Length: 208
Image 1 (cartoon, rainbow, N blue to C red):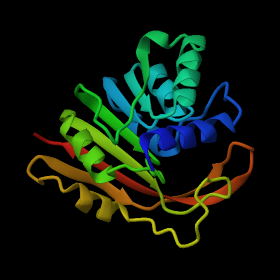
Image 2: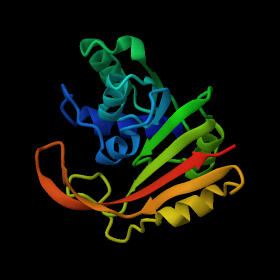
Image 3: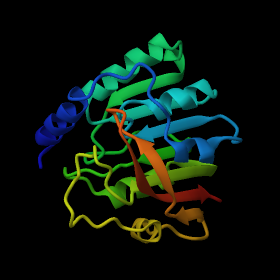
Image 4: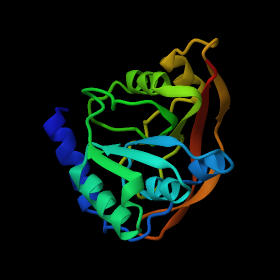
């Protein structure tokens, strides 16, 4: 799928959903970040922006990127309306082409799974290299399909967090895996429906 097709696909996904006035943060983000000192964060594939707004509200300076201009424009407007415009930089970005510049204390990649062209392992490897010493990379993947997900192929395979870590291929003397598990939770979809889903959670900390 070309970049143009990817933009069309994700713009369509976001345009089909009503703009959220107060999008919720992901549970795996809040449980991972609560208690950490605020710093500079990067959100890869920011979507509706619940994680970005929550981080900014906790004092983080957040760079948020997404391939969808619909998502980015909505997030930028939300940040301003919540009085967080100075803490949020939202921009359209294609991770298939390059990685955002800068170094960060936290990089979050929630559900960075797409039918479009993306070397995910390379993007996550770049993310790990963009961490400052002591910084964390949080990768949360779908371990199952929610009823409202765009991905409903019953043959879809969901790599484990250990497999994701192996694919990234980070040197253990520089990065340490702090968490790799598959917890379940009750999720609420855009239309209010609830369902039990599985998350695949990987947390990598840069030690040197």
